Amino acid sequence: MWKHNLRSIYYIALKDMKTYYLKPPAVSWGIVFPIAWILAFYLRSPQDFEELVPGLIAMTILFSTTAVEAVVINLELRLGSLERLLLAPISLSAVLLGKILGGVVFGFMMTVVVTLSSVLVFGLQVNTLYLVLILIPSLFVFSSFGALLCVLVKEVFEAQTLLNLPRFLMIFLCGVVYPVSAMPPGPKHLAYVLPLTYTVEGVQQSLGLVQSGNIIRNILVLLAFIPVFIFPGVKLLASKFT
Amino acid sequence: MKQDSANVISVSGLTKYYDGLAAVEGIDLEVKEGEVFGFLGPNGAGKTTTIRMLTGLSQPSAGTAQVLGHDIRTGITFAKREFGVVPEVSNLYDELTALGNLVFTAQLYGVPSGERVKRAEELLKTFNLLQKKDARFSTLSRGMKRALTIAAALIHKPRLLFLDEPTVGLDVVNARSLRSLIQELNHQGVTIFLTTHYLEEADLLCDHIAILVQGSIVALDTPDDLKRLVKPEPACDVRFVPLHEETMSEFGRQKGIHRIEKLGDNVRLYGESMSFLTEAIFKYASQKELEIAFINSVKPTLEDAFVQLTGMNLETMLVEKGGR
Image 1 (cartoon, one colour):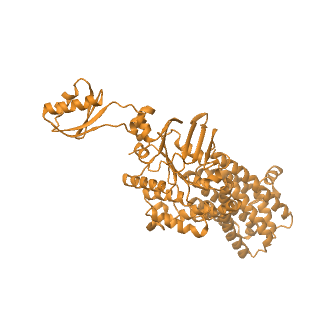
Image 2: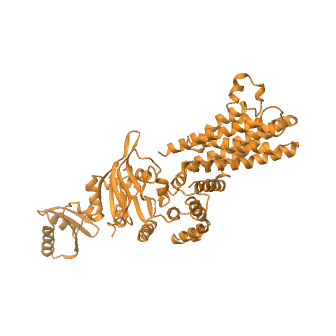
Image 3: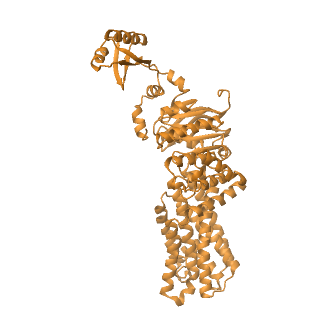
């Protein structure tokens, strides 16, 4: 049974890639928005842009994964096609994990493009192993986070609106544009409750832009966030159909 | 032949509450292997809610049900391998092709990889959609979408098929073709659980019919036995040649004839008994020197049974569903 569930997770993700990756909400929030932010920061201050690269990579992960979740979950909730998946002989967890994997793959593609471009343009030194160990859990964290919020609402636009509050909160609190170390105590404490902080720090460490901090801690914290978002997401989805 | 078969669905006291209101209340039913079981009722009667509970999309508030030998609370995943569901709305994926939709469904139902495309193409052929196999679902006509949605529910060769209002929204030709297909599937051994609000559809297809009103089953029997429950007013259809409406109204005023209705070239006479009506018709024809071109006693229909059992206005039910 578990083998069939695993295979189904892959089939659902593959179907979502074929079906939803080029839908307007995925393109606008998952591709155009991160690129627009990156360009805006670059044009404002090209000489300091290198320092912003980790934050912009983290922001790309956040937006691309969550934007796709809103499409793959809410479009299907609205059209009733999510019920097709729930009628199949697979677990509800497998359905949600398939949806999350769809977001992870989209986020991965976007992140690879942004990371490779940044590394090539600025000649950054990369610890590839560290970078992969930070990026993979981050993609799962934010895709799961997106799935959790998206199952709360029905429409794609409702999901994108709901997602924007934590997205922008994290952009301003988690070191994307302003270093956490320079923040006053209150926001600083809040930053360490939010997963994006660990992604930004981890990417900074992987690119050799900071020497301080513990990358293992960042990886472990990110790994711990994954079930924190997945389990309530499964519960919420189940409650929608009971 | 079907009475001795095993039950594929057994339901006892099945109940579903939404916000304290009963959508389905204490229903009991059994569906035998190989039969077409009809769930007949107006919009909001609880038909879809019952299907959702039996297929695991919704948890019952009370009661028990077994589908293909599996308890719906604990073993529904195992039962899902052996049943297919056609929802009221054709909800396949717009962006996938006809073939792509079937292959994806086959993947989810664990059809071996070597058989997926073959089975999908066989079904497309059965449903006359082979020439549309590379067309996206969004580009298909409503009838084709319906047919493909049914094909998707059959990709894993289920023993039991749930059909929720299969012909709603279809034109007469497509609806007729779909009914033939349902009969064909049943002849191949697939047990069918069908919800509908079309009486003629239930009468044509079903071995047993449960009439559901406001969440409760008010009658459950074969279509013929449901009709026998009805005690209709004796009536007779007759066609006189020539037909003069003024003489007919005179005829209708006779003692013992309750009323008279014109139905095209025929008239329907209601009276105190069939023997009285027959005698009166022949006597009237003889007196007026009319030829009787057609005469037939009116038998109770499923519609009569439905109206009598539910007290509902049939037109209201059809209008609610946008019926034909």
